Amino acid sequence: MSETIQLKIGDKTYDLPVIQGTEDEKAIDISKLRDLTGYVTLDIGYKNTGATKSAITFLDGEAGILKYRGYPIEQLAQKSTFLEVAYLLIYGELPTAGQLKEFQTKINKHTLVHEDLKKFFDGYPSHSHPMGQLTGLISSLSAFYPESLATPQTPEAIDETIIKLLAKMTTIVSWIYKKSLGHPVIYPQNKFDYVTNYLYMTFGQRTEEVTIDPVVVDAMNVLLILHADHEQNCSTSTVRIVGSSDSNLYSSISAGISALWGPLHGGANQAVIEMLEKIKADGGDTDKWIAKAKDKNDPFRLMGFGHRVYKNFDPRAKIIKKACDDILEKLGIDDEVLDIAKRLEEVALKDPYFVERKLYPNVDFYSGIIYRALGFPTEMFTVLFALGRLPGWIAQWKELRENKEPIGRPRQIYTGATTRDYVEISKR
Ligand code: ACO
Image 1 (cartoon, helix red, strand yellow):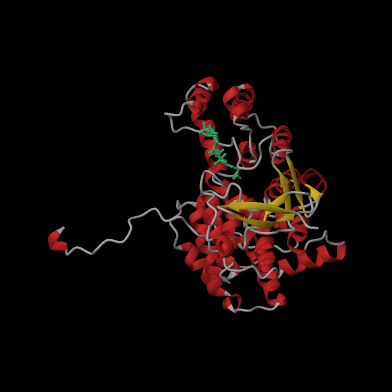
Image 2 (cartoon, helix red, strand yellow):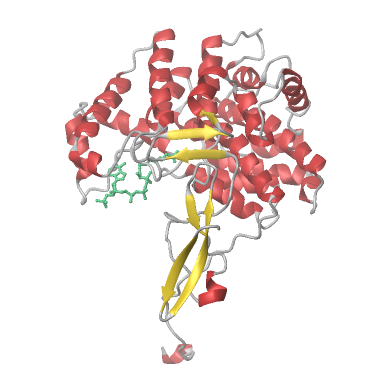
């Protein structure tokens, strides 16, 4: 017999079904709770609420485990490429060599961006924040490809939109970077693979034949793989809730990009480097800044530390810390902020404040140091996170549709004024 949980309200007892996942995690199914009892649940920040059933990503925050479609993140980071991981997340299985080639070929056909969108892009001030540009440009793709707005859509039409978005994202992201330098944009060359093409458009020059350093390509693949999905986080939940109203893929992803921008989420990678720079300029006294982070009267937080679900360690942070050491060594870069970051980590991991609250470095503690070593300006870091997260958002949006999930619409507990009579303005 399937497991149930008993809920007692007054003299009535209700049997609530228990849902069990494939990794044995359990949930109490309250989907009929309001109809049965008149009560709703309250869980501000959704700390205990499962919003969906998903077969894409599994993570165990207590054990520090992360898997995409069952494959451990450590294996994917070491052995796979970003495009292969994108295929895995979106279609559910690792591709055969033929499927991967076909995927790359289909993407290559769509890497050009409509010239009229470029006119719109040209209108942004050169120093506008890259994330502001990215949300606008991705949402605007829906205006250029109105066939993406039709509902319902065939799986083939959805796939066409997915391919276009994956293809145009690299071009748009590299153009935003070029604009920040005041340089002319570079058009894609489809002889390159996905990541190399992106790096070519980013670091290439119009006038010369460019070879992209394989060390940089490898580092970029690892970074993008580590960011590719992370189950129901703030931006992914945003993509799913926007998508649940049957909103098109471009605008759903654009909403996710906006959610990612905040410093408590993807914007942390920019905030970490800014914090490390500030500590360096202040003389590099890490104890002073640890004390500030612990002081409840001081708004300062140790950026890149803490995570809503990881309460042991973030497995991505382990991989990234090693990648950071490797890439700096291979590129022959000695970055003082890396030493500050390591000192901060060492002190914090022994400090009772951080130990008791289970605060560990997250994926973004070291990612910015690598992005900087590769030559990216700080304001581009969160855009790079978005480039990595794109396949995860797409997979989650696609799953929501395939599962025919209802529109997302939470309840609330109203705490405002009860009924009162309108008072004429002259009498207030
Ligand atoms: N520095 C100092 N104290 C912290 C930090 C930090 N980075 N993070 C959490 N705390 C403290 C809180 O003050 C709180 O203390 P209290 O119990 O005495 O009040 C306790 O730890 C729990 O913190 P919450 O904010 O309640 O935890 P929550 O799960 O809501 O937030 C979050 C998680 C947002 C990631 C938080 O740890 C944080 O702000 N970290 C810094 C920003 C950051 O690195 N974000 C990136 C996350 S990874 C990602 O999104 C890709």
